[in-house]
Length: 433
Ligand code: URA
Image (tube, rainbow, N blue to C red; front, side, top):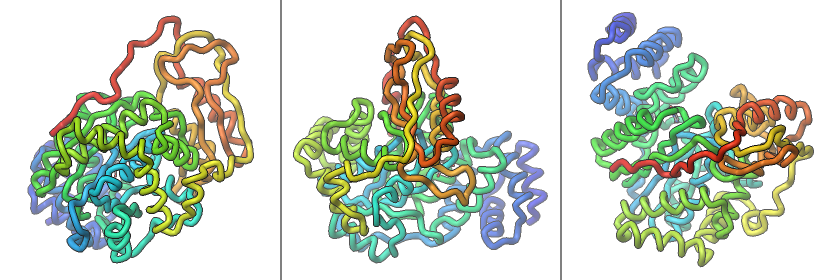
């Protein structure tokens, strides 16, 4: 086979065979195909798309490109939850302890921030001492003992995705449906969980900007997961506004702790309870209504927060910070952004909010950037709120003052203020079984 022929075939809009897809992934991982040819193929896939059969073959090829994990030593049903990426999305930090406290095992491999979106691993690393790089055997022991562990993806898990993602990130080919499906599901299927609930984001802060595209993404991921023998469900949820008020790593951990304490923002709490209830329902813990009650009770009784603190302790972190979140240090500098106009906030460009937090140091602009855990944005007004001139819209946090002007400009340009209030939009738009 020749890579040239594969690129040409896709460029001309023809479906690739399973053998061609497997050949390309295997040879790319072995270093036999240069990045420029793979970049050309990604761009051809971006424009021409892939059908479900091709996308399934690509997903399985990514899954099989490295080590496949065996979690059979973990006692009981293993569940995972995965978000397609958003701004202020700290749901994993809340949902995973809730379900683990109710007896389903969470053996979770998470990612770092991508582009304007945050990542669970970066957030957890804001907790002093927390180790996200634990050998697989130790990881399985923690899951058996505590019910939950969250670590980063090992280097040997789906290496094809590591190469492809880095290339897509710099060739404007991230937001391609078959490439997102194979990236996310390739990694998920290389781990060994029984049930997977996907939080597929839609709107200005997500990779798929329309509900139609997000629904298609959800349907394909669910179908491919089922073909691989997993119990699957996907929720399509709104990312036309950040989730909760906190954007940035330690700010988000604090908000997750508040939510586990029963004092979280309404939208975040609603989504976390729904995701937890769907996971528990998929794990046959009861009807959806019963599982919703179980999830709410796990928060009210404090067991979910205790499980989170126990996980932090087991992974080398200081659990006192979870029980006393006031210990998280504030950033050196704060800057208040105020409204320049009176009216209702009728909508925001959520991606720009994510970019503003990157400018403050909460994410990476290059692979080498070191994250500032305390940097980020705390929103004081969100879509639907009425503001007067001079009212606080947000507080920006950073270790250096130099990012404030650009972040403020981004935030103000991204915030639409109008005379009439916006129509209230639901947080959960659809469920795909
Ligand atoms: N998350 C991933 O892991 N991959 C994508 O392509 C998009 C979001």
